[in-house]
Image (cartoon, helix red, strand yellow):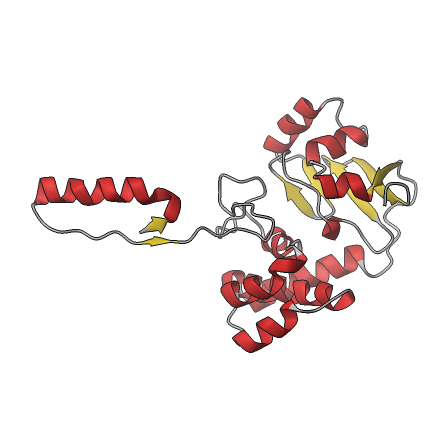
Length: 226
């Protein structure tokens, strides 16, 4: 059993069973999971998540689903939670602030299925404390401007950390990410090719970038380029 992109390997396995065991075997494929923009969801894609808590923390798992594209919310609620399908469809048609609430619900419910309700609610509370309760985390930190157009075009973590002068080059950012030294908010960045998402920014358009334990900077979305 595997994704539809593994059809050739599965057919070869069926044939191998026939030749070695002289018996029938069966293969089953499932459609690949893709986002509304056509990106494949999988471990070979930047920003993929793991069910193993040692590889992806409950908070990072929660943030992964919080960063879902608007057009995917209803479908992902139906696929990755045990909520009633009718409710998922209704939430998928939300707009504005309601769609953000639906994303948080998706994140919490999906995380609860994997890590338990307590861990899911703790992750949601941590995100709220960081981004929604007005803590002035930017005070005293260097601030660097970024436009919405840059975010929409797919600003990578490597580009962001270099822009914020936390790493001298994108190559260094990739090295730091591999070493586990990069964070955006409370989200660990293990792949410097991972793109920043709107959910990385608070209501004031600020994202906290951190290298190691002491080096921090803020990206601020500016009006230019909207």
